[in-house]
Image (cartoon, rainbow, N blue to C red; front, side, top):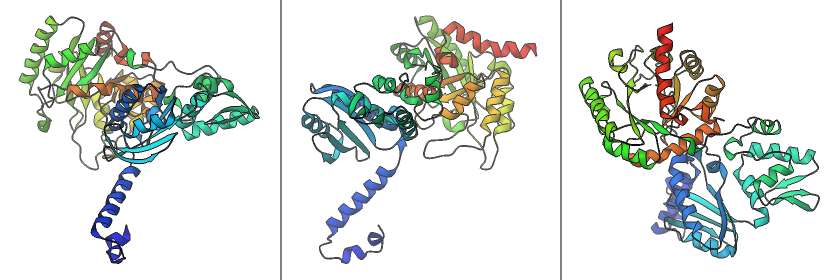
Length: 456
């Protein structure tokens, strides 16, 4: 890089402009490849690859591995494992998939390519008898695998990507269940494999029954054309119905958020009337009247209580803050309001681009427990906020979590799977989330904070 920048490379024999241009492109690609990318950017790529590869008759089983399978918020190189016949044919097919812009390697058992000039994907073909062992090994995490190796050693066993061995005899490897079973453990979900107590919990039969995407009854934070979304209320309802939801909360911005066409009170009331009309025509799904109300600098809310009390759900958020401001006091004050049900994206961070505002998340979680306020796992791919660590802490404190995609375009509703991924990494079970409640139970929960406040 230095010799490129100071021009000395160009003085070397045979270093023409074209060759230097190719070196520059290669370096740029290398720099790109070093970056970890948000899970949500990688997700559609991996899904497309899996779908395409499953069409090949030689493929018997296929799965992503690595940090992608563990649903980490960012991923590096993407790993995919396959078992099947004619490895060379599988690799050839993989390297010729649409979107492949460069082939780095192509052999009988491994292919490495770059998709869309950015994403490195490695595909390995492994023997059927070792598929489970390879999947476990390449899924990681490193810390989880080191812990497993220690257990294996204590039992006189050896564990690797090829299988579990007693001496030269292979005793497990075909499935992950076999591999864990050989160590006296039940299968551990990939999202938990971070060596954060999951192995101890597995031994003691304390693994959580993790929430599944199929448990989700609705999305609790989306935007419509009324503010900065692109979809009409009817379009949102129709798409929610297609996803099998029972409800979807339309939470447009409040009046102070001018840059996002925040709603003045008269427009909010007009929207509420339209939702009522639409709900009368719907069967199977209900639009919840909501708002993403701004928490102002003094901790008051952007709408008065007499307006908030007419809504089904109130999601409160900080959108505007000064550089050195500690936002903790205003969020704490907002949670004391009996009409605030959920705090949206509680840290304000954007993955890889913005750290977020100064906030004491521990205090926020404590206040949420005290006031019966839920905290959001914002599933938009750049946010994933709260993260898995804080979401697990919230669960431990008895705080309910709420997943919202923060969708501004109905094509983004698929991101619910990212929010569920965070929830699973946080050890959340269905009962820890608002989204798994049936409609009547949810509405009862949303009323409960107001009732609780009246008793105080």
